[in-house]
Image 1 (cartoon, rainbow, N blue to C red):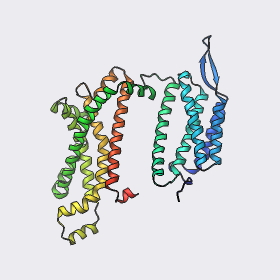
Image 2 (image 1 turned 45 degrees about the vertical axis):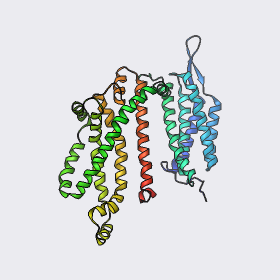
Image 3 (image 1 turned 180 degrees about the horizontal axis):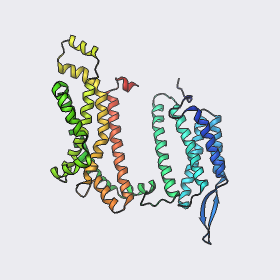
Length: 385
């Protein structure tokens, strides 16, 4: 039977906090009824207060009370409708109130955010079966991420923050759409020519050296401290040196990436090789297994979670290293070059667009490695959870 009722303990939000936060949302909504939504300039040039819409307040209060009354999927649906409809209407209205939003606007935004927080907490407590649970697991971070973008948009536009300091997500999205060819060329230069080759070389070198360190005790005592010292080198100091050595092309970026990701791969792989239990090792000895047979059939499979941890960490470190290296020398293309150049021109929206593309590329790369990990280490207790 599928358990479609919420657990009494939602991850991330203690049960005793839920109802007080609901009543806090109701209090904010009631207070917003008596405060102006915005201050709009009239024909005489004098700013006049605009009252908060009573319909929005009633919808928020009804959704909040119903969520307390119905501790089930019906309550979740009412929470979703009341919080998201209110947020959608406020988002539609906020351009007209740019820089003139009043306390009523902010209190309604806080109320809808509190209800959305309750929704995410309640959804996290549900336990379904099969694909339904997978869809639910995807829906929760999507809702959370969309609310971060929505709050960003509301705060920046409603408070009238200058776009040169912090552009809203809508402007960043429009700039991405306008600059797709440019951003694609930067992505190819940084990710395909710098990150991927450096990632493959650095991770492969770290794995091979880890095998040598495991095989030769002298290297474990002498090489690991040296590798630790190399990993502590500041990337800001190493990057210009690599540009001087390898030029402005992809070679210098690959070198910086290799330096950044070599040591995490080495340390995690060595720790993974040591994770095999003594009983399993004794069993391999009773079968007269050689070092390489023990490594391939016992120690390497046990080390897979450690190796994939290093691969996931390095997926983000490699991108950071390549972008930082491009700050110190690059052809007239690349994410790091674009960020440094456009920031100097005060094209903040293009800077944020490049950052968004880099974040999306890094997250996708990380997710791909995590998916491969689940396919390969499905048998491991850490994967079975």
